[in-house]
Amino acid sequence: MKKILLLFMVMVGTLTIQADAYSFLTFETTDGAKASVTIESLTLGISGTTLTAGSLQFTLSNLSKMYFSATDETATGIEEITNATLDEASEIYDLQGHKVSKAQMHKGVYIVKTNSRTYKMIVR
Image 1 (cartoon, rainbow, N blue to C red):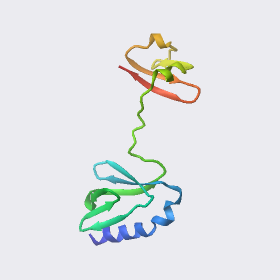
Image 2 (tube, rainbow, N blue to C red):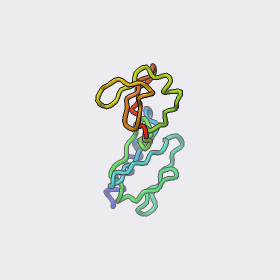
Image 3 (cartoon, rainbow, N blue to C red):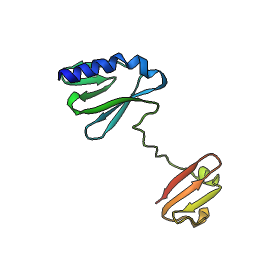
Image 4 (cartoon, helix red, strand yellow):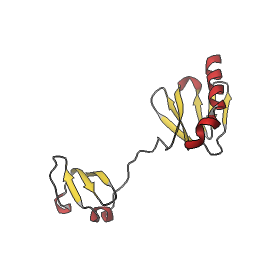
């Protein structure tokens, strides 16, 4: 317990040094789950075996690591593609690499290329 507390104090001491280029402090638990908090106005505290970071609480023995990150690593990156995005599509491919039209899209996975981005899309 003393080692964990000492490690935590060292990490808190270096917070201001390392945080300049990063917007989030990300915590990873022993089961692989991640939680991110913004470092703007971040408050950290320890009470017994519980670490409080902003509105999140962690049991110290369940934390595997914490690190700074430029993005919120808990975001999934999944977004809904609208018909307007499909109308902008310059090319649509199936997973076999065949070029298809919007009318030929049935259930399955497709690669949709627009002028600004490329999406992997699931049609259900």
